[in-house]
Length: 181
Image 1 (cartoon, rainbow, N blue to C red):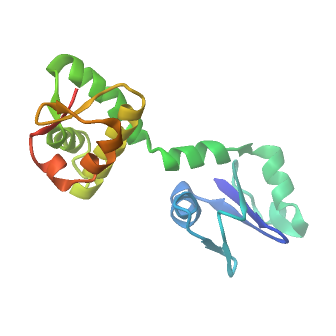
Image 2 (image 1 turned 30 degrees about the horizontal axis):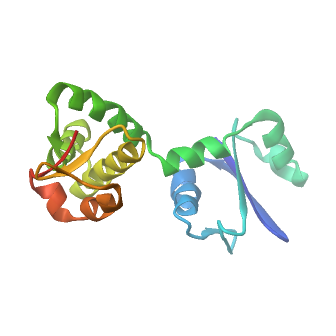
């Protein structure tokens, strides 16, 4: 179970016994996206507020009463705020694809960005096309900035200051002419 505290001076609120799905949908995803989180009739801004997330055992009513809930959470649980926010900002699927692409490139040489989308589809067949492109784009973008791969258009290397323009173009992802290597 997950337990949350939101603080934005001079206010604070807490939510207890959330499932991972509830936590992600109601709090973590909006927070990471920079959107206000609605909780207890207030909107909590990521720019001005502070979020703390603990993972621990579910708390019964008698453990929550008389203001003892948060003390029980911090005593019995583990602060997982940094880990969960990092996972939300950098999904595990991106990390997996970042490991797979250099291995594919070592075996195949250059591959097209269209092929990157196909690889994502093979790994995640339930993903929508937009999710496949987004996942591929994020992995390629990060690998480019780590100097782990290069980007070329029609065989001509793409300069660093042009990476963004190339990667946001649909033509780059739908034709075989834009490649990574």
